[in-house]
Image 1: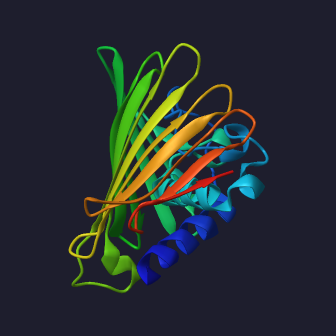
Image 2 (image 1 turned 180 degrees about the horizontal axis):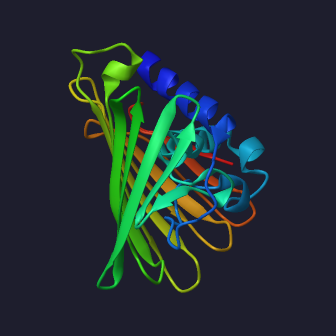
Image 3 (image 1 turned 180 degrees about the vertical axis):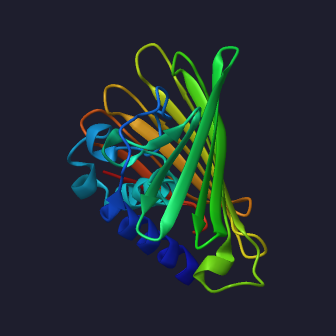
Length: 227
């Protein structure tokens, strides 16, 4: 968890000190890089079920490990053909994308002093109905040169009424594997299920008014709380 905290601190820090020196902006940028919970769930969910809010907020935080690097500062970049470059403090991000059939394929490489910190590769439908990205983190950057790299995959679909289905896997090498599935609907209702290394931990569902059920699967039998 210390490494995860360090990665979150890096994400917040470089986003706050982003800098651009170019004047062009890529025509395509991935449309889903974070959950934007404040605009997608009932405003009272944080008080009606702090437990459910905590779990989906944690998913959002893990997404931000990669998502915070995927949008150029001020929408501007230095460009060279189909390659775009911008900086965050001592970090440099190189972004490329290409239209392949009905999908945009994209790649990000982030370096610090010539060392690759992370890579992000993915695709998104041209109609923004679905997408995928895979985020690989070099853990040596946060002081663990002998540890396994972290790998996060994120898949999403969106239907015609703007109901979202999210699936996230966080592979922490030898230590753990986190799996989140969440549905966040256009009317602010939704549900989620969190598992770790194949074991169900927590789940919940809520309606448009911010009321529902939260389940703790770690107890026997599982504890169901209505809120």
